[in-house]
Image 1 (cartoon, rainbow, N blue to C red):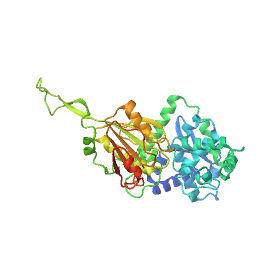
Image 2 (cartoon, rainbow, N blue to C red):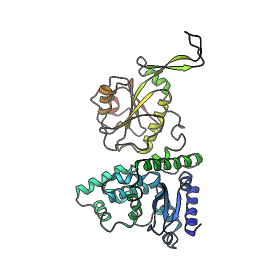
Image 3 (cartoon, one colour):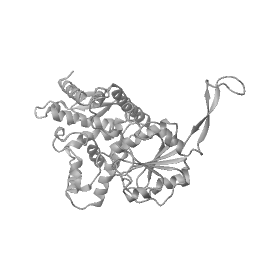
Image 4 (tube, rainbow, N blue to C red):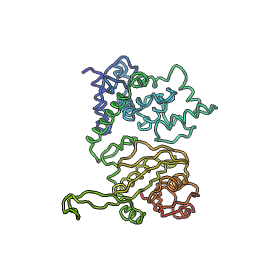
Length: 402
């Protein structure tokens, strides 16, 4: 093993001791010393992701162990969030590079980042929300470029976009060669490979101890991360109260009850399932920790046998999907809040047995009136019973405590 790989492995062990989940992920990633990369970056070999490190750069005396830690974590987060695989989807390459660095550097302490690293704080004038996905930052930056004008943040952005490219963006060069030239099948295989590494790391990671701050997309891989929380609401009772007269039924075979007609097993029994529309407020006023609690409660609703359609919404319906027991990799939205679109969707298109709306309650009272039972789950930092908006929300309201 070369001295470069030994030092890189030593840094990986440091991450393993400090942040076991990410450290186990690091141990599963191939590594190679290569003069083809200026510093450190991600490449591919036979469809498998590989970490490339320039020996001269990595072994220089001026590069501290603290900065090596930050540089390695930086690349691991890019890979885990699949930024190299997403890069080809965006027309403005350098803007995507900047957005991707904004994402990952929020999870790395400032003292671990080398000088000139790109941070969200450097764009304070653009008032971008913290801990969002790369798509959000890309379009926020794109709007800033199109709008033009002055200001410290926009001047800094224009400097980053000038040629020659910013030094710390050069390490992304293989994102637009090796990764962008993959076929659809190769891309799927690579995605599965990365997912498998995350799942393996999650299984090796022992629960307990202080959980390091990580993107929700990665925390979601930890075994039953959200499910281990005790439900705040007695969902069994709540769902009995909801739509008690409009439950859907289906037949299920059972060996415990012989057929009444033929006297044989398996017999059948009637099961009831409720069709629930769950609206999740994905506006910028709700941070990721609150959204994690929301999805923890959604899991417990699902466990009671309800058929759940989740709609993520801010001022519009952003996306919808059937909930299958797992927290999504990201939520789409991060704008303002309008309560009307999901209620209108329920009234005119979906026709659920009941509606559950997770929100902080900070919006104008909806004009749409739900035609089905409705429950509002208000986040702990949201409006309370003394607020006029609380009284105006149609249906039952419960304040969450977390």
